[in-house]
Length: 261
Image 1 (spheres, rainbow, N blue to C red):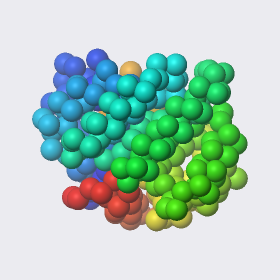
Image 2: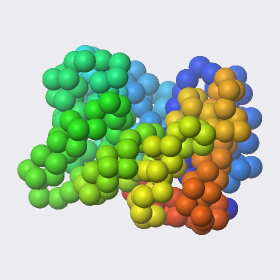
Image 3: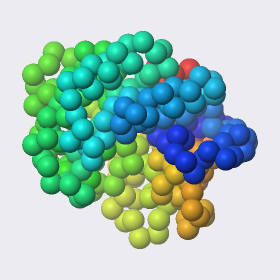
């Protein structure tokens, strides 16, 4: 059984001491590819080092919405240049909108739209972070699609929206990725959304080191091996086998990010 963890942050300090052991555990659980996200440009060098060290890691480059005030034209050029120069870059992001922790809507919109343009120009998908911003994000993506001849591709990562919001982004052509939150007993809205996503748009992730899934919830650190528990929870919610969910989500990640396993 092969799994792809479509969103990780392995450059964080909590992995510094035992990353080889962490890797052995993800290999034991069948994780054959990982997509490493990026929150700001000062991470680029370290993430590149990880991708060069571990063949199964590909990565994205971008600026997180909570860092939107750091945006400059030079940063846009830096993101573009790195995405062009490294064949292991498979996406732009994570980018998006977050109005849960910040209210600088105009700046976040500018930065998000700028990164959409970069992704479109390079024919790369976008990894989208959306928190308390689904209405605004839908509007931006709808306008972007209407003003461009080809559809931009991407994924709503660590998705926690309602079924109605989920359908908005499915209708716009996006993939939906579920994290450890789908294993939480009281996450009824996420459970409902996980049941309505068509199989050809479904992805799984850990978003490690955050949001460890049940039965690992409460541990200090999430890790890629635990993506198996996400697959198991989705399989149970949908009445499928975990092998089928693994097969489908792996094929979807390969298609979206142009990966081969």
